[in-house]
Image 1 (cartoon, helix red, strand yellow):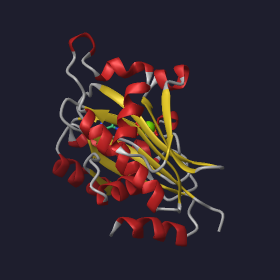
Image 2 (cartoon, protein in one colour; image 1 turned 120 degrees about the horizontal axis):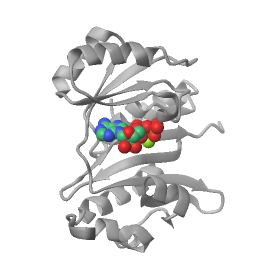
Image 3 (cartoon, rainbow, N blue to C red; image 1 turned 30 degrees about the horizontal axis):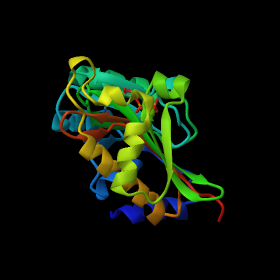
Image 4 (tube, protein in one colour; image 1 turned 60 degrees about the horizontal axis):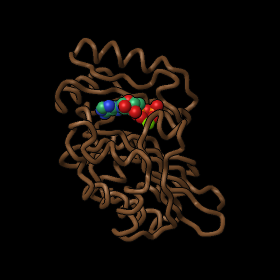
Length: 229
Ligand code: ADP
Ligand code: MG
């Protein structure tokens, strides 16, 4: 499916959000780096997908009404064997939900230099806007984020990255390697374009994006659809 069809289908079904799996599928069609992923409806399918992706893997429950997955125990990291896949599948499927439940099997991304947040929202006056920050406690407590109205240029993206207080974490802090800022600039620019080109996307939340010395990887993604028509 091409990216816009993923969105159009969901809108046609009067859905209000894409699951993480669908959101990443959409982002991948636009050339963005996401964790390898597969959807499983059964234990057997989960085992096959896990073997194909390669251990260790991550398993998450996908259901449209589960927004904050960790809060309900729907994210299981570092699964290393087939019996663990089967046990985890059963455990995830027991989590209560009123939506269709499926399990996402995904590659376990290696430890990054930093976990980032990239988001978009609709400003009531100016339309699509983009947000950037370092993930985790810094964004929640320090509100250490930068914003721009879309569309942004590479210059704007570079400024957004440099103006957060925690920029040092990306710039070789305490002997860690410097993060791949070119890949990050390119991500911010593409995300800005997505929000300009897809008017049915009300909000996007890529959280976290892992950043490395070479490249980035989108580990979790949420897309909220516009519901006004
Ligand atoms: P939530 O819906 O709670 O935000 P996430 O999918 O973001 O769930 O998972 C919670 C945390 O688990 C992430 O912030 C990240 O640190 C870790 N994580 C999730 N998926 C992966 C993955 N595929 N590889 C490595 N770490 C992951
Ligand atoms: Mg998340």
